[in-house]
Image 1 (cartoon, rainbow, N blue to C red):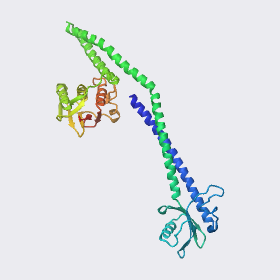
Image 2 (image 1 turned 90 degrees about the vertical axis):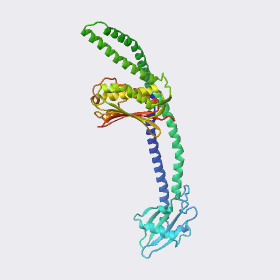
Image 3 (image 1 turned 45 degrees about the vertical axis):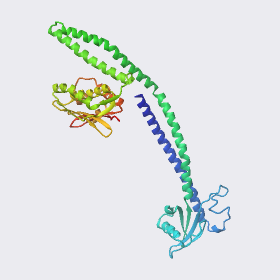
Image 4 (image 1 turned 120 degrees about the vertical axis):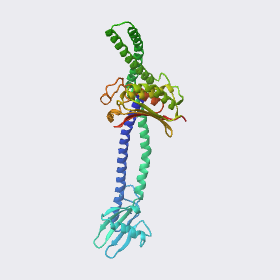
Length: 411
């Protein structure tokens, strides 16, 4: 439980960190992109406003100097004058060569003139344009965007290692914080497990004494009322002993005091033995027990604990199944897994209660009836499934309620 709590803490904190880093990354990317676009647009406006481009000195040429007295920025450009009436166009200046009377120039101008906006981009050629209407003709300035895109890619690539380093650093900090934050919870959880184990041990002795005395009273010559009292004492003591044994089983599982002994186990034989043991119980309850067990379903596990799991599921099905309904057990061999299913007809369990069935001391009384039990059996079964690297889940609909246990087949 503590490990899952730490994982949730780390997952939640890193999700928030990831969102923050992503927002910062997008904001920086947007800011850089806008800055680069602003430089490109300034070149466009300067080029289109300067009529005598060919008469600039090298220090003042628009493709070299954007701002006087500031760092020079090189952006390839060219300008074109277009007379829409007669379709005449010629290049008036720029750093591009051999564009005059070419198909490339015609394609660029066609793509530009098809657009309604006076300012925009031609993605297929990687150009940014600005159009100026001078009455009889239009002047169009084009600036190459490849430098923009290269600078943007370089900026992004330079930020990625920084973002990755920050993420890993914050991940390490989150793991350390999760350990620090769960220390009080872990301490309380250990104290609770220790109390559960100690209380179970301490209760076993007086319960054994009570049971022994109750048996002696039942064997003695008592009147009818005294005999009923002795029988009640015996019955309640047996119930308490069952509760204590289940609590002790869970306490041992939490503390891992008894390690499971794994060996090759036939889940088919284990399920069949449990069915034979529960057939009289099911018959007496008026609920027929049928089974379909595939042969030679071999797994690697603890035979006693797997037998306990199957017994818990069968006992649960008989206890809560509808009167006269048929209890069904099946064992199947899937591709790489063994699957055991125990089902019983009855009122469907609501989905909001289905997820709580494996919690300790939980009983969905309003949907399953007032039956004897303490709500620990399914918790023990789920713990056994977890030990065997398997899963135990519950399904319920109008047809039946099903408990499905799967675990890996023996390799």
